[in-house]
Image (cartoon, rainbow, N blue to C red; front, top):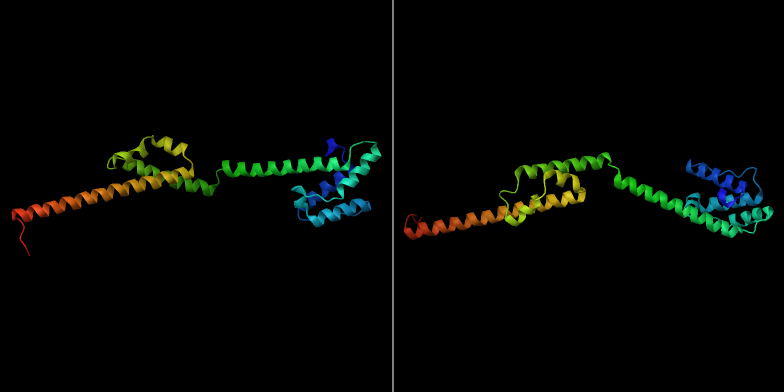
Amino acid sequence: MIDKHTSPAIRLAIIQNLRRWKRQLPPTINSLSTPLATALATQTAIGWNNFIMGRMSSCWAPLQHQYYQSLGKKTTGRSWAASLLVQLWQLSWNQWNHRNEIDKNTLHPEKQARLEILNNLIREEYDIGPANMLNYDRQFFRHPLSTTLQKKDETQKRQWLDSVHHARRRTDILQQQSRDSLSRERNLMENWLGLRSNP
């Protein structure tokens, strides 16, 4: 606000009341000129959270315009308000972006615990290994354990574990089908050779 030659009274009123809003205190309008008190009252009715989001009272621009006129500047209060809106939107964007970076890059204790559980399950699967899996399912173990643990995020680790579990089930089903088929063939052969007594 300083580089746009904002009225010191407007700047002080906005900053003080944003600080009070942040602490959940009522706005201060004592000892202010009537137009400034009106601007603060209308902004309070709109909401200071809305001010941060760029929803400003229409009373600010005329007040700033009067200040520009007193300085003999040709800048308008309307252009000041537009510039302030851009700054507020940039502030909101930066805050939103900062929160996203924290959520994305900070390892919260809960997330760390989930990752440790997943890592332990992956280690167990690597200990079992792919030896008894179907050939095309062994591709899940083509990377070393360290790569799987370090390069995959939480979602990818869950997907990897699900894929390995499905692959192991596929192997179990095929092995059971093979055993059942062999057992049927043995029974047929024993019956044919007469080695099996009929009940």
